[in-house]
Image 1 (cartoon, helix red, strand yellow):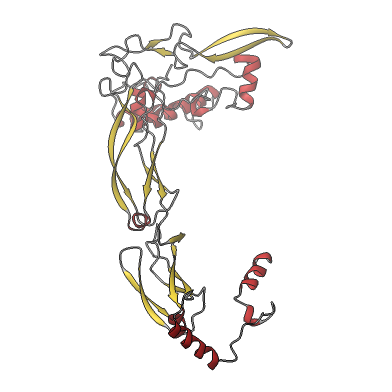
Image 2: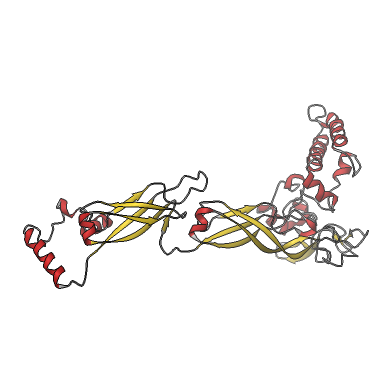
Length: 385
């Protein structure tokens, strides 16, 4: 059964914080190791200190008042989560499986009031929404506190009783014969589920669990700069625990949809602009739309080559924590006309004839002129650069 923290401090359940402090100081003067070196007094002092810490914590005290034990855990056998022989899981489990309580005491009953699990909600956002941030109302289905019994799990004024099967131990033991001799094993009590208590008259709404499933609406604020896979934590908005225990957290995971124009790389954005061959040769200026609804001018310098990139500082995504925006990289794709009329053909022919030195040639791989070519890029890729 749950430990009697009030009894440890010798106070009533309705004691105020001042009364708790007064009782603790009185016992501490009697039991402190500097005053009383006796081993039993030191152990008692540890129990008193833990009881004081539990009862002065509002959330832990609520669990105690609900009949639970906030310091209990499935692998704990004493105060602070350690067994009497110093084992906590691992080797202690193996030792107990062969020798039972003789090796270090039983696990004891676990608290009926348990902390709730975390919940996950996935939200799909466009790139624009990730950049600007959104405030959206969502519906979540989680376990909530039963409004009839307020988490106690009992009907009316009834109270939990000691389990008749395990007598409050929370576990039952069995002895089997093996080549090692008699082996004692322990397992959680099937009647009480390991809590050491049963509810003879459970709440009609939650059937003794202290919680029910319900759909509720929440408003979630997504900050600017979030990205795919990032999570926003809403503390205490997850699943309420068994026995009306504290709720876990709700995590809203962002799924970023692929954009038709921009490709994201961290805080930077990339887009491609097709530039006619003549504009690339003579130079021009064009306008591109940016992610947050504005626009920016892109200057195409005369003689711009295919694959050139224009970097627009401060036109990318905002950083999640600082708000500083990254850059927009505009990749220029030079478009060569595939269909020419007679006049266009004549003009280009005259241009070619006026530049007899511009002829097609195979460039050597070590030539500086090949620095930005396809072959050079392939060679750099294989070299690991």
